[in-house]
Length: 464
Image (cartoon, helix red, strand yellow):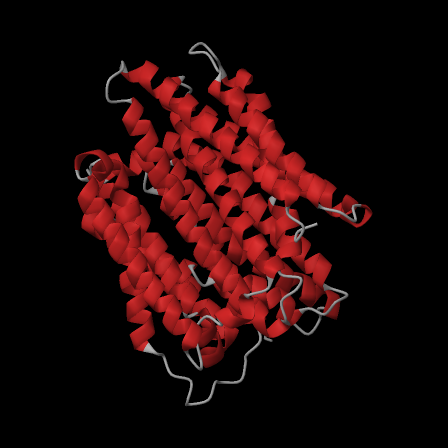
């Protein structure tokens, strides 16, 4: 490591922990800011909603390609060079996105962003296990989680203020200082690693197959909102092709002697149950995150800045909840009651939002946002602690990569599902009233999903 001699070992370790939390937080910050300000970005590049949907898919495609090859890049170049390069690629994509004047430019820039950003979450979480022993790891995990939830809390209000006081391009440029600091920190603090052997090849064939599968799948998810009623057969055929390609990739990985994803080692029932709950969590969380700005800005005419601060309030509840949970976790031998309670809280919060009147103001939303914030900590933190406990150290990286691939799919699926349901209701009703009714329908769906997930969590015996 390239560190100052006057730092103590504990200080160097703390700097590394902060770096891993910051690098991961950079991706969460940019993603949440992008989604929050998407309407303004659409107008800025003169794109229609149908074309712009592909921009969101472009980031996911780039991210998933990088996640799949994360282990190869890390082994080949070492984490210091790999993460520094990934952050520089992310920075280049961010500058490109902020400088875009057309849909095509934004599409390329977001793909580049995703390719760089896809390295961050998985690599930093793996490094928490690699760089810190059993004594230091709990503190490293705590700082890592604070980086994620701190960035999530900052993002909506930060994006809203940047747009209100400047232009939409500032949503991208505002992320750059954090990314630059993270890149410098990665170069200065992360250790070099031994290079992989020459026999460790890039394996372009499986990568291209996976790329074709996810490009097709993301295209289906991105355009579903527009084609589900007008061209359902075309959509079904495209979805079938995507699933066939993905199934072929997974089948070949299962039978490959040296697979990119070691699926055989991930058959543990605890891990698979946790993976299913991860998908449910990301689906519910992204559906809720998708619909709230529509409800606040378009249905209830809440100003942009106020909407941003309301989102930040919910994320701050999660952040405070984490600090409390980490203090109490050791006194909670069973985590299942906490997760069930979190899902029930989310169901109640969504039901509350579904019943808001057209005259409801920002203060009326606080109770629902409080429940949304509690959901974020009461469900995902216990799941994260339980899912990977049964995996060996060798399989942990493969398990975490698979989880983050699932995260991207769940996020895209949630956005597509939310858009389809909102559009369906808006076809035949007055505009503002349609949005309010559509948002209510979507919140009732989130409430139902939360209740079903709570029942499943209650009866399953793997995550306890």
